[in-house]
Length: 369
Image (cartoon, rainbow, N blue to C red; front, side):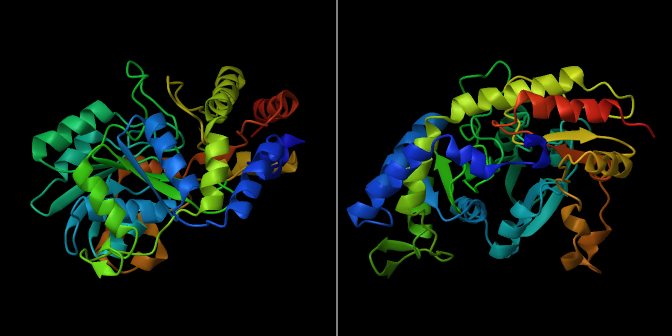
């Protein structure tokens, strides 16, 4: 009963278990476990997949965001424009640097940053713009690239939920290839997930790439010689790289399955009090997120039918308890606040079978208020 989980990682990995076991054995018998040939191979393969010149593996997606921002020159006291509806991840990276997150509102139906509102927030202390491709849908990157160029601001793409995503009319240009730098997460639930933590940073700038290489390993220019402040110990290990090399070969077929599931949901869910996400080309459906003004009642109804749901994410960043009493907690973003009260995630992953999919649809359509 595949609808009883938001994601089934055991089933997901069982499908390619023999390939994964062979990759893990190869690393075990190599005697090389950090920054070796598996990592180098994956970095080359993933850069090629994204359409960038360089890729560097790091320990996790949050490190990718922080190192990426540091490589762009973000310093303590500066401001970084981001969104407040994406789980606090970019805010965590910004705060770790000692910079200040400045929150732009989102478009009401796409869940991604509103370019016009973001531009209105640009000021003399703006050091970077973080654009998050949320739930598998890309933001309007032509607009953001034009905005960044107009104001001379570096642009970081947060691609943690958008592996392989693209935009209509730009199908050959994948998520991660638009900005100055892009951060990816390979947390196990991601469209391209490891069997533990992992992340990567991609760029086509040789200068930024060199800074990333130093920052991910203590700020070293050479062994034991530190030249960059803010360096850390953040390395993708050989085991995870080997797993990711296997899974990268299956990513496009998994994406097609996610897209078929998303399309079926959007075509067959027809409840008057449920709004399905916009169907746009290039959406990779990391999550399928509905909206309802009666979200809690819908969630209770689905729970009664043993259908898994979740809320991604229940609090906006400036609503988090860590900001209680601070000026940032008094911010109000109209579209972000309307959405956070209505969103509900239902199962959507490649192994969700047709019976499970139809069970979810039938349960939603039969819901009575």
